[in-house]
Image 1 (cartoon, rainbow, N blue to C red):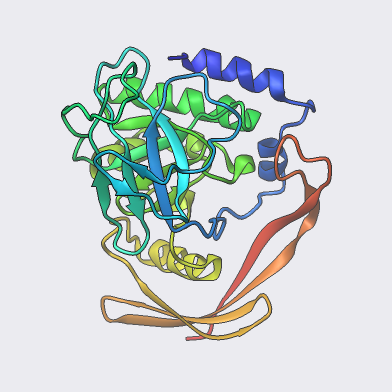
Image 2: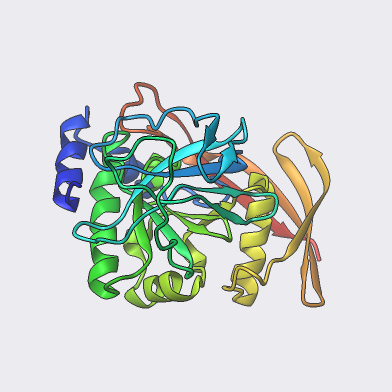
Length: 295
């Protein structure tokens, strides 16, 4: 299992430019909100280092889990260096936000028989992207964040994971079972990281969106959470798209007796174009959302 320093080194070797994509994104203050993929099902596989650049397709089935959904996205993960905690494959989907667990196996055992081992911690699962072979920024920002988390909270259920999207928004993380993607977590405070890892409380300035929702719905939800300080994942505003014209949406957001109607528009970023990944040869428009409160 490689160390955080090893992840950083791999990231530096892969970088084709002096300016990395995350620096460009931060430089124009690109919006984090609404930067979520449309994946709805994830298969997490415990896998030792080194990881390939791409995690690969999910297998058709696994012992203890049975058939794997055909739309499942594979995420490789591993525990923090020097941890002896046994790991297990598991499934998560955006429909019911449940973790379906398989049985852990020793690394040398690749046969069909599963070996019973203690399950993953029951506290929130926090996966920090440290996949420097996929994009340097994930190693440069993610590996030190994972190291920081374990120094801050020894034994915390924070794991290194492979690519979860949004390279330029590193350090990225996914928290389960709530299914939120988080970005630029390296700038979060120690208090925010502790509350996230121990209690699942969301750092409001770092939410990219909730998997299973559309980007515009995630933007409306994050606006509502920030307005009323809703950090618990279970305090979930209900969002309803009432109209859409291209990248212009009208969305109703409500929770706890409060209801607002929002005009939400996605526009090209006024401060220019950036590389979305460190390996990108072309620049793209940075993301910016404009939100107007109608009532």
